[in-house]
Image (tube, rainbow, N blue to C red):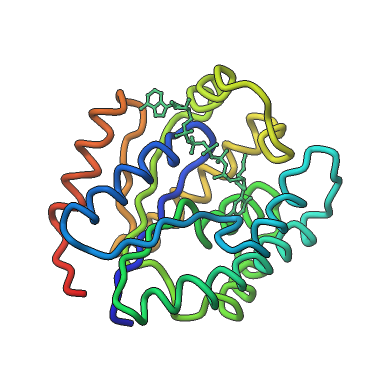
Length: 207
Ligand code: Z5A
């Protein structure tokens, strides 16, 4: 496709949201037309599915959770991401399909084969060109969230759950080194953004 696709990943409290804004600003300053988006969500219908997924009063089977993640992703990919890439835009998403491998495949133990089938059906070739994986010790991330207050359904999980998600993320980063860049998210925000900028400065994008 004509555009450029960036995803930002990591477990809780790594600073995805803070750095998502930084990455979008970087591309805008370079003159690119940027679509800033997120998962689960990114379209009005997908945001409704997000509501079901994060509502702490809901109890969901792991496979139901995975199917809802991919249902929301299907809306997002078909109606937002693919048209934007076809129009030559830069798409920057706060989480994408690697989150399903980490959380549903790893932490919920559905395994990567199940997620791989859904990935092929829903995402197919629309994979990110670049994935910034913000990596941080799980306890440090949870401590940052404690300061923020109320937790959603998934944030209520325990340390072992997030450790499994982190492990699955790092496994994917090793498996796909051509698109993953692992950023040390333990430093202060300014230092983390310097590391991200170094990665972005090294890109050659023509769209
Ligand atoms: N999920 C899934 O299971 N499967 C999937 O396929 C997808 C998602 C797509 C919602 O995602 C949940 O969906 C998420 C995974 C699951 N579950 N959980 N738990 P989300 O991305 O919307 O929610 P989140 O992961 O909780 O993200 P967040 O709330 O945006 O947190 P964050 O990414 O860490 O962002 P932050 O708000 O920028 O940072 C957190 C705090 O740390 C904040 O107070 C910052 O000021 C502070 N911060 C940030 N950086 C620093 C540094 N460097 N130093 C110190 N403090 C910092």
